[in-house]
Image (cartoon, rainbow, N blue to C red):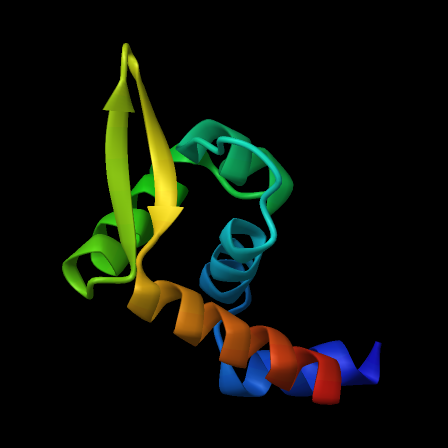
Amino acid sequence: MKSKKIFNVFFREKPAMMLVQLLHKSNNIYASNLAKIVDCTYSHVVKILQEMQKAGLVTFEKRGRLKVLTLTKKGQEVATYIDKLKNLL
């Protein structure tokens, strides 16, 4: 797990994991799903997602009562670089 430790030196683990999970999603993903996947509280995930939205990395698409998360083009690029770096470390 040495590579995981060095990765965490450069990036905050949960936000980075969230972007990578969104990059590799196979179907619709919601904040509640993402919270379970990255082992975070729902409120923490929503707070991080709001920051990512302000930075132009993710969008929320309302479908009924749920908001589907999608990476923007910029978000896909950032997530791809994070994923590559994670695999290199």
